Image (tube, rainbow, N blue to C red; front, top):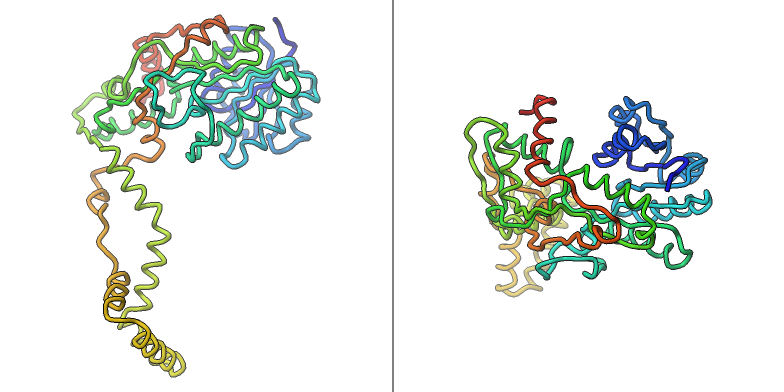
Length: 384
């Protein structure tokens, strides 16, 4: 099936930019790129791509961008809170424009951050997981799924796994760490990586645009190689010459650290209370006659209202306790963020059999080949 023109949202992102390159250079398919920030469009502008200014929250700009388009690839990553609204407005605009195919690129994250099953396939549950990224993807995908059920909307949903390749957010931080002489692992890198090369994801998008068997379906898109995070991280870190120190972080220690970070606001309130309760600060305030009288009166009331045990407990709370995460703030150690913990503590293999069967798609890149192609780019970019 051929299309007059395809609108690509999220065209300046990692996958979107590569898709635009492949549509222009490999498939020779006409497309239009929706661009919110032209400063990020250099990579696709060199392709002489048609660029349309717009924003998923701007209905008029969507209508203009969709004029003359009969297919859409939605790669835009919305803010977690606004994801449902942005996807809903794009779907509504696509319906007004009479779009005949809509490929919505979601994520394996809709199946949750910590699956119980050893293998995750499309039958795994989708619900709110109380994890921001997962829930945003669930909410956005739900809009498309509802349109399919209610209106017969001609959509295909794809759920890529860990997408790597040139410019990948999963690759460049590893290179940066290695250039600083370190390798960072979580639980020894034993988590399952589920790596898929970016060109294979773009192939799946093109298949979703053309294969009618895919209509109304949702498909996990993963590579064929079983890769753990130890292998993935070392595959790229080892491209950088020189000695490196390995920082191996336990998941529970990281989570405890981030729980402490989340309580910073509470800690700030506690610090303010301790300041107000400190004798030196009160002595300074007491020099102001009205405040001094108020402080003395408050102390007398508290002395009458509280027994000795409660007074000791209150004093202990106001003094505060030493942070159990003090060692984690050593400047030589970088604590991984919460996103890395979610990804790299993952223990399930993600299946791709349904995508192979109904999309007529299969990944073309074994992991070693994907690393080799990414290495070529890293050398070209003078990162290694």
